[in-house]
Length: 67
Image (cartoon, rainbow, N blue to C red; front, side, top):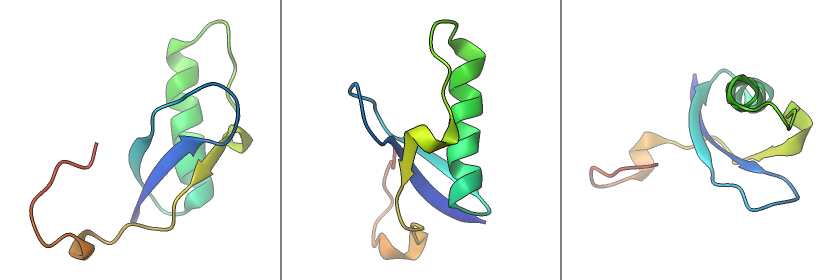
């Protein structure tokens, strides 16, 4: 599993989500599915999102809140 930051690839301002997933596509799908559960007017697709490179927790020398 990897840690990814998922952001909206275009359109309105959208905060990021930190997710744990096997790959980038699964990370985008998780966020789209989560948002679609709460939205009624907008339908999100995984293609609506961009994903960071995997985040290595060891890159953080101190404890920190990611999101």
